[in-house]
Image (cartoon, rainbow, N blue to C red):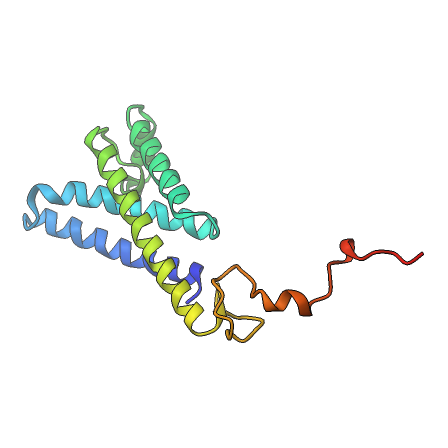
Length: 174
């Protein structure tokens, strides 16, 4: 599966998990764990949404961006702006919140780091699987049909001799 559709599926799964944690927390099943878990899932969702926009960004860059955006929303709660927006449109409470809670910043960091770790593991696994099938990264057939088993992003050494030099390297005979 390509990266953007996989991230879209991950966003849906994250929203479902967040709603489940919220419901379990309201029912008293998860107790004190539901708040931090929900906050971590918020950061995971931000990670995934930033990843959809910046598909080629490295996982740790996405994690830093997810934490920064989550922290910006949290610190904005120190102002009256989120409460005013929620007053105009109640569903904004799910995105903006209304009350600053400093421990939420740590939960966002945990969620962003976990998202980056999972993303890195999935990306490496997919790259290894593509390599074993003779595919370059991204599921594109390798030039040599995979016979050389070169890592994604690298060319087989035996293809260098068979390819013409790039136009800038050709010498003029004039």
